Image (tube, rainbow, N blue to C red; front, side):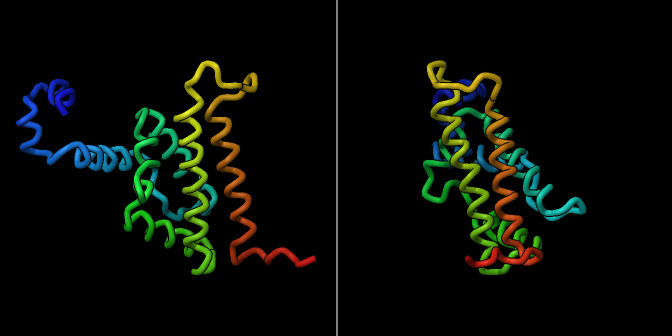
Length: 165
């Protein structure tokens, strides 16, 4: 908190006058940063496009703030609010998922994103980490998001379930 106060040019006590402590500061930062990613809402271009844009924008924004993705992953709720959960479930219901599957679809998409952020936070910046020539972090994210979307698209009500063998 002293470093933050020094950065903004106030005394630590002045900062504590407005913010209770480090956890409240983190919550405020998360609220501000999360307002920068594209909302998860059904649009004219289909749910797949909307989900893709939301996940990729969330990853891009969080990678601009080193440590924030790790902070969210370390939280008991992964930084997810009830509002975000309800919006995500509603999005998947509107996209054609059964009400019982909509929360699972949202959780699956978010789990992929948080997993990717975790890998990026722990490994990607290490010079000794093994790499495939020509591939960059965004290549992995784009591939993973497409895999999530393709997997989920086979489960909507508009698609018939896979036949049993």
